[in-house]
Amino acid sequence: MKNEEGKSEATRREQLLAEAAKAFDSLSSPFDSQWLSEHEVTLDECGDLSEDVARAIRFYLRTPKDERLGAAVQDAAEEAGLPREIAAGMAASYRMSAATRRLKEMNR
Image 1 (tube, rainbow, N blue to C red):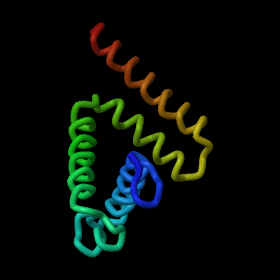
Image 2: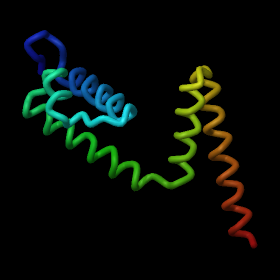
Image 3: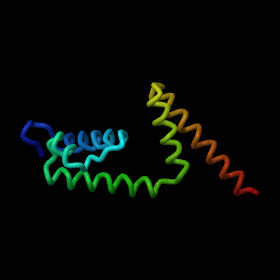
Image 4: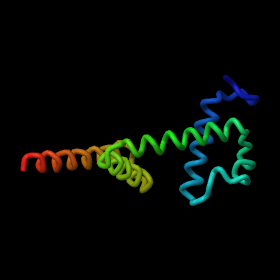
């Protein structure tokens, strides 16, 4: 489905979600009326954004702690300017260390 500007709704939805993440990163709310107005968010889009944020939170809560920490390592490395491949390698190394640690604990 396309919106009035010819962009797909999925793209618009992803753009709003990315902008919402930026808002959260700067400790502001993407559900604030000023933010919604500045981004020309419709009522339906606000509902979609709310569902997407809730889905992301549920996914986060279901994800094992080591995976979450590995993702945090990767995010931090990318934000520090490291290439994506190196950041992913750092995260994989962290996950491997965590798995090794768990195996050692199981064998005690």
